[in-house]
Amino acid sequence: MILRNAGVEPVVKPAHIDEDVLLASLIDASPADSVCALAHAKAEAVAPAYPDDIVVGCDSMLFLDGQLQGKPHTVEETIRRWQAQRGRTAELITGHAIGYSGTWITDAVSTKIRFGDVSDADIEAYARSGEPLECAGAFTLEALGGWFIDSIQGDQTSVIGLSLPLLRKALYSFGVNASELWG
Image 1: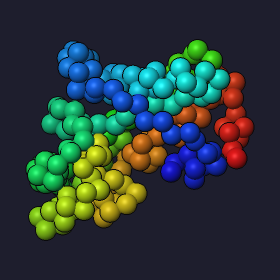
Image 2: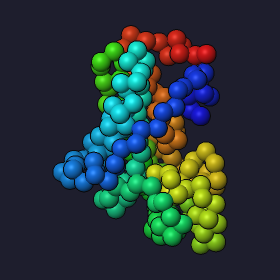
Image 3: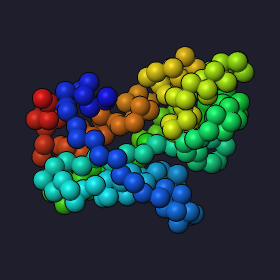
Image 4: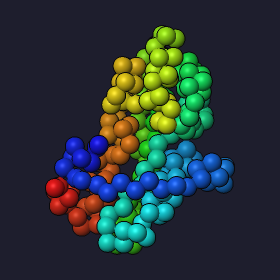
């Protein structure tokens, strides 16, 4: 959605990696390094099929109470997380791995998220909608979850999943103008 709204028609190729195994191997890594490792593993998994293209891998995780939190996967876990994060501020870390012509740029963008003091009824309804089950931090900014985010401090596009400013800088380092990708 971000790229389409920015004039680029991407080829979307989900990478299937075992995130839990990779994260378990990164016990001493910083939160940003862990999220970047996930993004890089995803990008490397699909890159061989696109040797002449710009390949972008991303992953996001919420950092709250000293812990990285991935996708909740269940209604019950979503409710538990929202009850823990409502009314609080957390850091959403989005890792990026951008490759072109054998060169990789790997970096993370951190954005502060202020969660609203959401009612139990809204938490349960949101969880039961299914929307947040496969989302980092158990929320979306661009859809139903937008009701429950009081503010963000940082790059809005990274919260949705891909930092356009970071991508633009990576493209420039490859000698590519963003406008060259517009359809």
